[in-house]
Each structure stands twice: as C-alpha cells, then as structure tokens.
Image 1 (cartoon, rainbow, N blue to C red):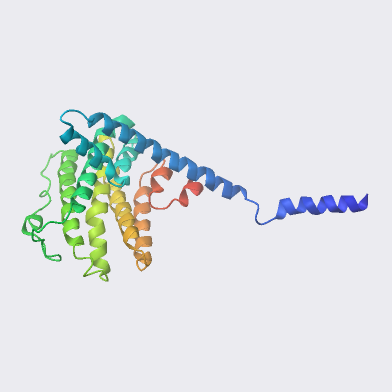
Image 2 (cartoon, rainbow, N blue to C red):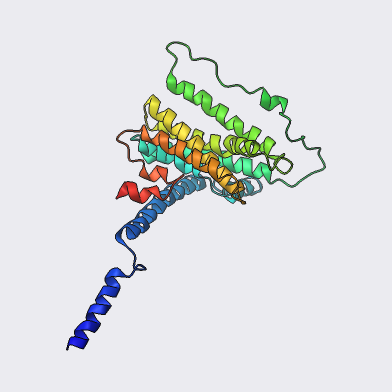
Length: 279
C-alpha cells in the first residue's frame, strides 16, 4: 500500500511541477492571441465584402474582370483594417469607416500593381534623384484662425498619400543603396508608414475622435507602418534597434488615449503585450 501511495504521489508531483506543462499566463497568451487574430480577421472580411459589392464583375467584362482581380491580387495591408480599428477606438461604428478603409486598400492595390507592371523599353528614372513633380509637393500652409481642424487633417491625408509615390521612386535605388539604413527607413516611412498614418487618421476623424486623439492615432499609424515596412526588408536583422525604437514611439502614442481599450490596436506593433493588457 505504501508503495502504491508513493507511486501515486510521484505521478501527481509530475503533473503539478512539470516545467513543460502550460502555465496559466501561457494559456492566457494563447487566448489573447486568438482574440486578436479574430478581431483583425473580422475587419478584413468586412472590407473584402464591401469591395466585392462595390466592384462586381459586370459588362464589359474586359474592364471589370481585371479591375476586380487586381483589387484582391495585392498582398493585404493592415492600413485598411487600422482605419476601421481607429474609428471603433474613438467610439465610432465600424460601418462609418468601411468606405474609407476600402479606399485605403485600393490605394495600396494600385501602388502594388504599378510596382509589378511588366518592364518595357521605356527609360526608367534614375533612383536617388528626387523627381521634380514629387519634390514640388508641399503640405498645407499654416492654419488660419477659425479653420476647421478636421478639414486641415483631410488636407494632410492627401499629402500623406503622395508620399507613397516618393517612396516608390526612392525604392528604385535600394539595390544600389541597400546598406544605407536611412534610405530604407525613409522608403518604409513614405510607403507603409504614411499609408497607415492616413488610415488611422481617417478612421479617427470618421469616428468623431477629438483633435488630440486623431493626431495620436496618426502618429501611431506612421510608426506602426514604418515598422512593418522595415521588418519586410530586414532579412539580415541589421535594423532591430531601429525597429524597437519605432515600436516604443508607437506604443507611447497610445498611452495618451486615456480610457480607451488600446490592447487590440497595439498588437500591430507588439502582439506580446496583448495578453498583459487584457488579463
């Protein structure tokens, strides 16, 4: 009997102390990760449904079939989903931002399509030299007294999207200037960063966010998008310090959103923090 009791005690201690057994915090992380993935997946599904309804394949099919195909051929960008998430974060409804989110995706799809057009015999611009048309783009001047702040943000939104063109142009020189970290950061900021900034600000405006909330979410989007861009080009891991700094800046912007549930939106830059914030 004593032998059996000793054997049972040994087996019990194995299950209670085995370091390989998942702990409660670990299980919490799994649940939180699943919740986060489900949240973003639901937004993506609604954006896709909106786009399919807006761009159906109809006559003439020679026009609308390629248009429909190219809309969904581009890899997904989180900028469109961020637009919806920002709207919900400031108290708006998802439907309020769906058209803007679809427009953000279309901008991304157009840029992706342009980058992957078959090469022709036409001369290509020399990388590293700012094109006159791009260089002449300027943001709006100083705000006049009484000017509508949301109108001011909308002016900037157009300016942010023109940055994508500049980013695409400068990216032509990355093969030659691949070791220049500042060039890589600049390209990622102009392409992914400013697209995410535009999405976040649009969503916050449509959701009725306050001026400081709009600006904080715009900066968050800028940092988050830049991080994603650099991570895609950081195959050798030579810009990890820069990535971590940008993550810190992004999360710092969310700290100013007092009383807002930022755990889901923060997962764009740091998924590991979601379990801590939700628990």
